[in-house]
Length: 319
Image 1 (tube, helix red, strand yellow):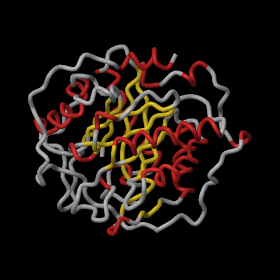
Image 2 (tube, helix red, strand yellow; image 1 turned 135 degrees about the horizontal axis):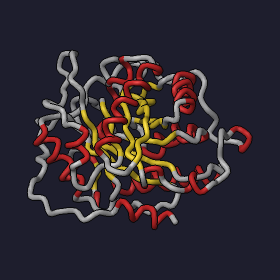
Image 3 (cartoon, one colour; image 1 turned 180 degrees about the vertical axis):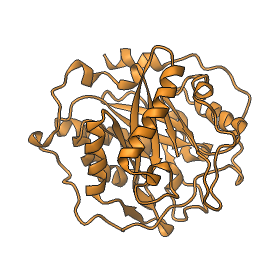
Image 4 (tube, helix red, strand yellow; image 1 turned 45 degrees about the horizontal axis):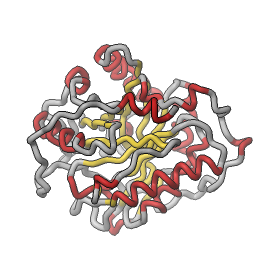
C-alpha cells in the first residue's frame, strides 16, 4: 500500500544544466540563539500504549497525508524572533497566519488539499556544537494546540557535535503525538555554526530512518510519519545517491533550503531534484527580515510560482 501511495510522488525529472557551486557565497541561515543547554524534564524514551493520543491504525493513518495535500509550515523557535517567523507571534496568531498562506496554496495546487504546520527548532546548535533544547513543556503546548486546530508539527534537531542517531533519540519520544513529524538539518552538524556548513552521510540518513521506524514499531505507534532533511549544498549529504527512501513507516522529505534571488532558489531546487532516490521534495522560503545580517528571498516566490516548480514540492516552509 505504501509503495503504491509513494508512487504518486515519483515524477519525470527534466535534465537541468544548472549546477550549484559549493562556494562560501552560497546563502545559508543565520542566528543560532542561546537557549538552555538541556531540558529540565525530558520525555521518556519509550511510549506506553495508554499514553498515545489517537492511534488505531485506520486507513487514513496509514496513508501519507502528502499523497493528496500540500503542507504549509512556518519555521522557527518560539523564543527567538531572529530565527524565523514562528517566534514573532503567539501560537494562536501564528496559526491564523499560516492558515492564510495555506489558503493561497489551496488556490494554486489544483485538486489537492492543504495542511497547516508549525516547524519548530527543538535542538539549536551553539558554538562548539553543543545543543540547546527548547523546554519540552513549551513544545508540547504547541503540539496540543496544533491538534485543536487540525495542524501538524515538525520537531527539528540541528545535530551539532552529536551523531545523527543521538539527535534522533532526543526527538523520537514526541512521536507519541499523532500530529508530530521529525526533521534533521545537516547544515548545523558542525562545531562551528555560522562559520562552517555541516554535513551528514547517506548512511547516517538511512540510519535515522531505520531508527525512527524501529521506534514506531516497538512503541506501537501507528501510521506513517515524515522525516525532513534539509539541503542546499552538495556537501551537506555525502554520497547522496546511496540514500534510501523505501522505509514503510517513514516518508523522507528532501527539502531545498537557503535564501536568495528566484534564480538562486530555483537552481538550489533543481540540484535537489537530481536526487531521484529521494522523490518527495520540500521547498523553503525566507520572509524579509529586519535583523542585521539576516538574509531573505528578494523577491520571494509566490505560491503559484512555487507550485510551478518541477517536480512540485509537497512541503512548503517559511522562515
